[in-house]
Length: 389
Image (cartoon, rainbow, N blue to C red):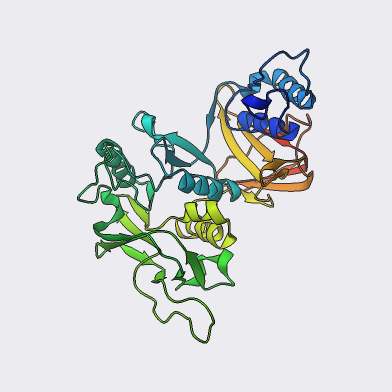
């Protein structure tokens, strides 16, 4: 965490709650603690963050052994890097974090070095310049049983930023890109089957803006939703849509033991810019109810971040809950205390005990058919929960 507002204003600190939140997020995501200040501690003229910084460093010192030798237990990964669409990536980051899917970010420059075997799905959020080697690795991941989710113009160019003449990701079941339309203002997707979209039970439409990729797909590629193309908007007695096409909102293509999922628009960038729940609820339903990817369940609000790590020295699991409810717009206030939290973790063995490192108490839990239910009486900024086997 950086103490000061900017180089020209190094004598005044940012919000103390922002600093404490950053350190909690570092610990929760497998990092360490770092406090950066220009000058000296003893004569610093804005000491508003000192108490919060000291509290986090003292907590880490008391629990230092617990923060060693950990590996993320995330089952989803997002590819990102210097040449990626940052808006699309940030939107997908929020889709996953606010719906409590466990995920890692893999940077593109080390993508070939990383082992992807632990993941159920890899998301490529409108990342255009992708090398042939990474494309081949993505297709191999799908062929071996994984799910590759490609968004927008993913892999439309090679790593030299040259436009490809053919489709690089064979797992998508796409035969040809007809054209890319950049202005889709006043367009929607019609939901044809409501059974797999429980978050959208009271709407028939997904709104869409930005670009759309018109493509030809293999016969065996499943098309989902129907595009309502741009049309006049205004008074309902004069302006309305009269066409629902077969152009899809997303597709699914069986590939080897796995599948390729293609989203021919930019839901992440749209959500990053405008933030409507119509978009995030749609993506969450696709991930959970169409593709079968399991999030952490319970009564966690969207502003609580969840991470899960494995501790190799004793086979325990280490879950963090980070309360970001104090983050409002560009300002960081004190987070609101949340009471009586219930967390459900699927696919786990029955533990011997569940312990809070923050309150130093045993937490009540139940286990049923592979799902672990943990009750957390109180969450201030952070809870660190050790699941002991």
